[in-house]
Structures are given as structure tokens and as C-alpha cells.
Length: 378
Ligand code: PLP
Ligand code: MN
Image (cartoon, rainbow, N blue to C red):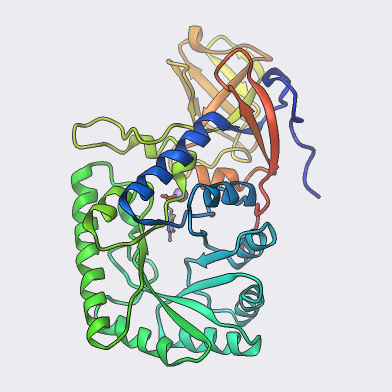
């Protein structure tokens, strides 16, 4: 059973209980529009990644702004998206379990469903599952474009896998999955450009060999929030899979443009609202948000507009704010924290508390949305 929501629609910002996952609706909507406008102006498909938000509410808003569908990482996420009304879902992952493939094939009765493969055995297993349920699955052949995670080698090896897909009656060859995860958080634009240039060469070379083998490659999909402009400029990719842009976490804010400035396209829209439980000494305020409220794999949460206060040493249910005593809040005060890494932070919470006018005098709760796919990891 999900927990009691920390707020109800109509309540004022001051009435939100802590800790809470707060969505700044105004900034979120500007981020939605900014990415939709970017992709529309350049004629590139946008298939945002639901691993970030785990929410059909957000997915449907992205689709209303022109997205072609959703990506997700897990079959259980796909189930929740389809149940929530999303009609086109690509699992950007390899699946080696027949039970999961069965669940995915069942979803394909009501929605367009795709998955990635990087080995002929994956093709065989997906084809058999689709046949068991009398459906057709879209298949993207994932190539390793430098991320050194999943993915068959670009070139001939990838063509062999695509040919196996094309031979199957129950699979449709949908294109290439060419996502460079390791490039997303490279800090300088030069590093990111070099990585995506190499990835593009690998993707283009593979697409050319597919054409020589008589296989049409309709989609080359990839890109995240850190590099999407580069994939778009290359002219090689025709689908973007960005996820974090809707929330913008503190780690992405550390990426730099050519002039050394932070990249400005998106605003911080996701926060952890933490309460001060105790202030035992002037230079230490204890927050009610620790590891159970904020993922710290990409760095600590950053206090929002509170110069001189530093979040440090989280334990399970406590976080410590230290620094200049003048900058520190008092017992009963509340602090907005920018998550270090948005995706795993979202997965720690049951509810989005959606606030209108967050940073103004009339801040109030407009909606409370479930993090519907929280814990959906199968
Ligand atoms: N596509 C794939 C396959 C991913 O694994 C991810 C994130 O890890 C994304 C897209 C979205 O990336 P981001 O959240 O950095 O925009
Ligand atoms: Mn992430």
C-alpha cells in the first residue's frame, strides 16, 4: 500500500509535510515545451525516457507535446505505462528472461511494443515469445557506440543480428539503438562532441552496411539530456531518448558549454522538500531527508538558493546541513534540495507533490501524482 501523500491538492506550500518530492509545475512545463520545440523545429522524433519519471501522468504530457511514445528500461515500467494509456513503448534494454518476454508480448496485444537485442539468441527468444502470444514485436538492434554496456559491435556483427530479426515472422526490424550513456555526463562540450562523433561514425557505418544487405533501417535512436544537441546536429540519429531534461538534476547542472557556462536549456524542476528536525549547534541543522529520500550516487543534493549551506553526511533518515551559521535554517524550517541524480531519487518516493508558483508568494499544491512505477524493476 502506498504511503499517505505528504500533501493534498489545494493546500499551501507551507502545508506540505516533509520530506516530499516536489515538482515545480511551471519549470517542468517550460522544460517540456523547450524540448518539444527543439525536436519539432529540427524534425527529429522525441521518445522521452520514462526511467526518469516512472509516471504515466508525465508520459501523457510528453506525448501531448508531440513525443512519439516512451522509452523505458523495465518490462514492469512498460506495463504501468500501457495501463496508464501510453500506446507506444520501447524497452531500451536486452531481455534474457522468457517470463519477462511473455509479459512484454502480452502488452503488444494492446500497444506498440519494442525491445532491444544484441545477440541472435535474444532474437530467437523474442521471436518465440511473440509467437506464443500471436503478436508482432518491434526490435531495435543495439550497437555499442562507446558506452561499453550492452550492444553488439557496430558493423557486420550488427547486420547479422538485424538479418536474424528480419527473417522472423513475429518480429519487425525497427532500427538501431545507438545510445552513448558514458558521454552524457562528460563535463566539457569537447569531450561530449568527440564521443558522439565516434558514436555517429559507428551508427552510420552500420546503417550503410544494413542498406547494402537490403535491410531498411527506419530509426536510429539514442541521445540523452547531456548530448541530444550533438546527435541532432549529426543528422545521423532521427530519434531522441532524453529523460532527465524534464527535471534537471544537480549533476547535469555541472555539465559545461563551450564558453564554460552551465548548459541553460532546462531549469531545475524537481526538489526534495526537507524539514529541519533539530539544530543542536549553530553550524549544524539536521534535515529529515537522508539516503531514503535522496540518491547520492552522482553527488549530494544541493540546497536551492541557500549560499553557504552544504548538505553532507546523509544517514538513512538524516541529512546534515553545515556551513556558515548565518546560512543555516532553524528547527521547523524547510529547505528545498536539488537532487544529485533525479532518476534514482524519484524511485525513493511514492508521490510527486506538484506545486504551482513554487518560488512565489502564492505557492500551492495543484496536484499529487503517484510515482506509479516506483519499485518497478523487473
Ligand atoms: N536512453 C537510454 C538507453 C538510457 O539508459 C538513458 C539514461 O540512462 C536515457 C536514454 C536518458 O538519459 P538522460 O536521463 O540522461 O536524458
Ligand atoms: Mn540518470
